[in-house]
Image (cartoon, rainbow, N blue to C red; front, side, top):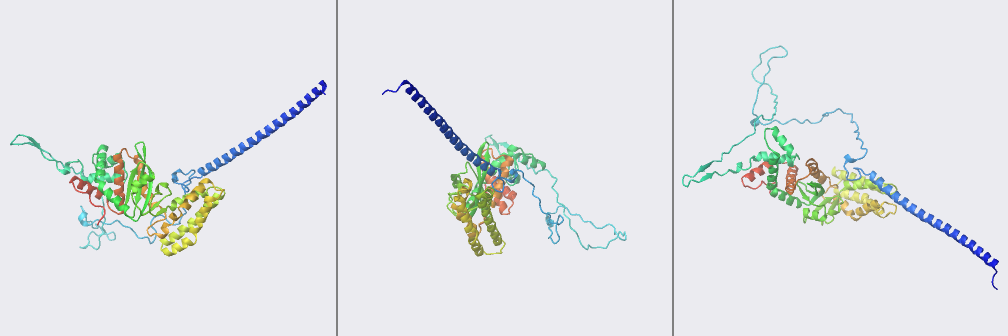
Length: 485
C-alpha cells in the first residue's frame, strides 16, 4: 500500500532533521579533530621552542672557562680582585738580591778614578796615600757612532793585449748590500720579536741605518732559503722524540684561510702551514710519527697510530660546559669536575715529590679513574641529558684510555699547555702582521719561527745564530749546526 502525500512529507521532514543532526555532529567532530591537531601542533612548537631556549641558554653560558673562547670575549667580564697579602710592594725581607753583573775589564772602554776631596768631619783636604776600598759602578751606554760602511770599488780596466774592457769580480761580502750581522738582526727582529716590516725599518732607522721595506722583504726571502736545511733538521730531530705535543691554529695568506700546525718536543719545536686542518694535513705534517702525542679532542688527530694523551685543560672546559646546563646535565658535569679536582691534586703531589709514581697509579686507579668511567657512561646514555652532553660523554668514554697516559708514562704531562704556549707566538704574529702575503712568506714564517723558538728552548742567542747563517751563506758554506753530536 503506497504512503499518502502527508506521510511522505512527514518522512522527508524526519530525514531532514536526522541529516541536520548528522551534519551538526560531523561539524562538532571536525572542530574537535581540528582542535586536537592544533593542540598537537602547539605542543610540537612548544617542545621546539623549549629546545631552542635550552640551546640559546647553552650558548649564552659559553665563556672562556667552558670553551675555547679567549677571556677577552667573555660577556660581562669582571675584573678579578686579588686578595691583599698585607705586605708592602718590592723585595721582601730575606729575599736574595739580584745585582747586575759587572763587565770584565777588557770590555771596559773608559775608566775614571775618583777620590774624596774633603773630609766631612774636620773639613781637611789631605788624605793618606793608598786606597782602603773601592766601589765599582759601571755605566752602560749605546755607542754614539754611525753605522760601519765598507765601500768596494769594482774597477773595469782595459786589457793591454786585446783591448777588451774587463770588470773585476765582485767579492762575496759585497754581493747583497748588507752585512751578515745586520741581516741577522733584521731576521731576529721579525722571527723572534714579531715586528712588522715597517717596524723593522723604523727601529733600524733609529740607529742610523737606512733600509726600506723592500730590502727587508729580500732579507726575509734570503733567510728563508738559508734556513731550509736547519728547518728540516729541527723537524727530523723533533719527530724522533718519544713524545710530542701537537696543536693547530688558523692562519691567513692574503684572503685565503690556512692552518698553522705545531709539533713541540722537549728541546725543539717546529711549525708548518697547511691549507687545511684535516687528517690528511696532520699526516703530511707528522708523517709516520708513532710516538706519544698530546692533543685536544679534535678528530684530525684520530688517525695517529701511537699512544695519545688527551688534554685535561680542554676536558676541564668540557666538564664546565656540561655543569653550566640544567637538570641531569648539571649533576653529570659537577661530578666530573669533582673527580678532575682529585686527579690534579694527586698529580701535583707527585710533581712536588710527595708521592711516587707507583703511589700515583694506585691512588688514581682506586678512586677518580673508575668514577669518571661510570659518570661518562651515565652521561652518554641518560635520556634526560642534552644531545651535546651525550655526545661529549660518549666521545670521552670511547677514548677513555687516552685520558690516563700521563699517569703511567714518564715525561708526559696531563695538559697540552706547552703546545698552546708555543702556538701563541704564531697567533700574535698573525694578528700583528695579518698573516702572509705569499707562499714564500709562509715558508719564511714557519722556518724562522721554528729556528727561533728552538734556539730559545736551548737558551741560545738567535741573533748570533742568524748572523752566522748569513755569513756562511755569503761565503758559500753550510749553515752552522743546531744540535751537537
